[in-house]
Image (tube, rainbow, N blue to C red; front, side, top):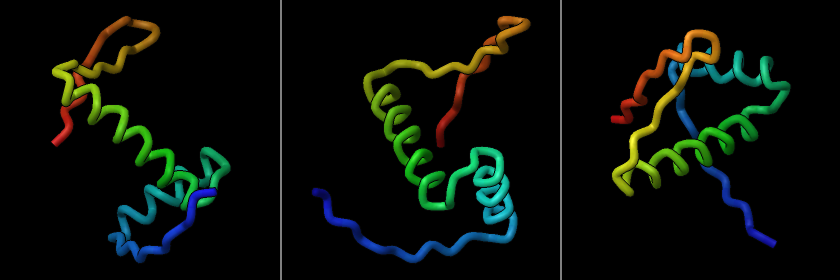
Length: 70
């Protein structure tokens, strides 16, 4: 079993609002949302390191936009 570690995270009011809105929308707690965000960021980072591009596509119009990660 993996051990768990605790950290303190300081967010701006705007960042906390976004986190709380995502929690309500996804019916998850803050820890679960942040864990999902970390996994998504890691997935994107791995693909970008391999030289791949990451896109999002509008399902209706098929318009694509490349994600730019800073």
